[in-house]
Image (cartoon, rainbow, N blue to C red; front, side, top):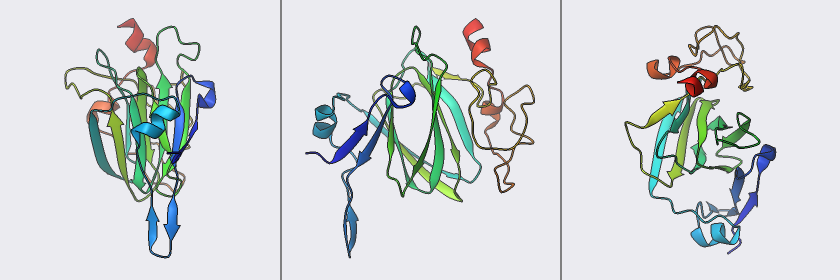
Amino acid sequence: MGQITVEKNIYGIEGLCIVTPALHGDSRGYFMETYNENDMREAGIDIRFVQDNQSCSGKGVLRGLHFQIRYPQTKLVRVIRGSVLDVAVDLRKGSPTFGKYCGQILSEENRKQLLIPKNFAHGFLVLSDTAEFCYKCDDFYHPNDEGGIAWNDPDIGIDWGVNGEYPGSADPAGYTLGDGSPLIMSDKDKLLGTLAGYLRN
């Protein structure tokens, strides 16, 4: 027990938490428990996860912002190689922080995990040459239940730390990282609209 520290309600957003596992290292290397249900419950987080996912992406890849509509998921996300800027946007109806976002660096060095409650949009930008990204979900993926909003929606105003000006769409053409690397997105994500547009429809 006691193998994690939990920072709750980060950025003033209820339910959004940073979970950091304890690291035990010596001359051989290190060991850590990346997930322990008992420790999570002791910290007041009682969630049953049912699916683990993992992706690998190159520098400048931006995935998101995604969510499930009828089957929302709680996610526990972390990076096992490289580093990303991980972003979560509160889309909970009636929430006092609706539309507010959190941007958190997750890396293999800092070992931080972000607990993202249901009804948040989520995405990340790869800052390192490559990044391996892992996350637990408390509901299964439903392929016909996908929702999304533009990563650069000016009304949300996420600071991704990139250079470029909003062109009126989610297309990342013209945006770059600080070192000049271009942003890379799926064709589907390039077509995502604003939060205001999503709510209208």
